[in-house]
Length: 261
Length: 261
Image 1 (cartoon, rainbow over the protein chains, first blue to last red):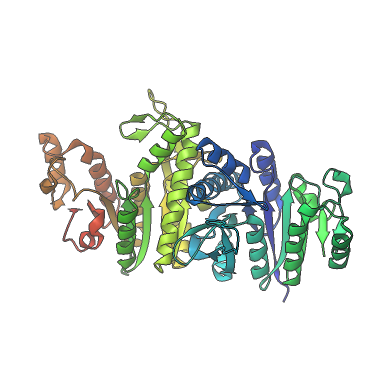
Image 2: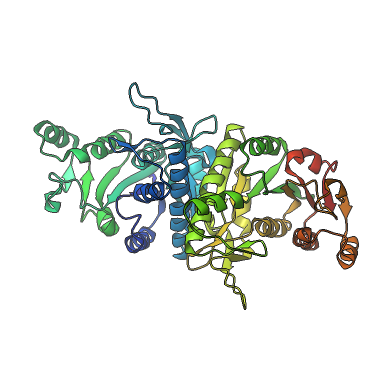
């Protein structure tokens, strides 16, 4: 039996905190036919709120050290402000949407990250995705909008990387559905040279990627995204696309962005 | 056919911003057998955050004038911080819960309040409740935790009174289910004299209430809550109870609080 398609779109970067870009992105998102999940970040807005509240922020390898005050900030910004604004906009565009964090319906099982030398604070790593509840919600014809907050089994909220959440949902749902996973951001795709938008790679497979890593012909910042992408493909995800959020339909049509296969 | 019971509990007052009281309340809440909805406020935490962000707050007749900055604050606090913390705590107590605002799944249709002389800003009044989607979610064995944020049909989020949301859900759901609506707060029940906890009235009907209003033998601050309660009863709600959040089971057993009938 052919699996039903499910589109999982991660949006991040500079799209979320630009009202005009975000609205235009959401309008394109509603044009995708079929079942959909949108996973969002929102780090820049969180950083700004933390600044306004005089809560010092510390990033290690692109991860936010999350003390208890910072956890409040990211919970408010991601699961409150950004999530509900996206949901309200989608609803107004006749895309009936429900906003979730990983805590809602307990659909993401996570634990506090333990690291031998760095105390990340309330940062969570994903253990498991409850696909039954996600499927039930999708079957109610709801589009799911997911904020990157999870919880552990003691009821402790945790700040969790949105790329990872998108990937974990994609992997878990791939058993029942045909998954297209899109990482959309402000770049054209995977770039060899971060300063040259035209250096983007239209298509990449694992052999090429390993070679480029070896020869250092790929921008280092792209490597974690690609590692995630290849892991997803290895776990049964049909297709992963990385590219510009302002060209969502072109990304899906294969006319733009980097396709990982 | 006998309707299935549904308990709709509003929690507000000083419970939400007191971690110990809230945890104890939530533990009692999980002890209620059957389908449940929890509607929460959180005004005091919102006021504190607004203060920390230097956003001046103005209340008119107990309603918060909601300019665009205040709307961000209440969306973050109600739909983010409070909602997700309650959900995470309930989940950790094996009560599988999903947090919603009125915008989620578009389940509350609302409009911006228009008033001849007062500009309330982004305050919403409820037009309709989508009972089909609520029923579908409840039928997934999810306990619903509802934050008092709604949206209009243009995608504008709106700050909406939590008592009203509880009442509107109760009225709308009463067609299909047998509703017990509980307003739980930090008082023993409906008080004749706000300074005397022992002046609470165990039971009140519409005739008594009208007489007490006429004779001014009831504390004025209780009148809107009771008006709401009698309207709910008139619209088909089975029972309304007003009382102390620290005695939830006693309230439901009729051993404490004010029963409106």
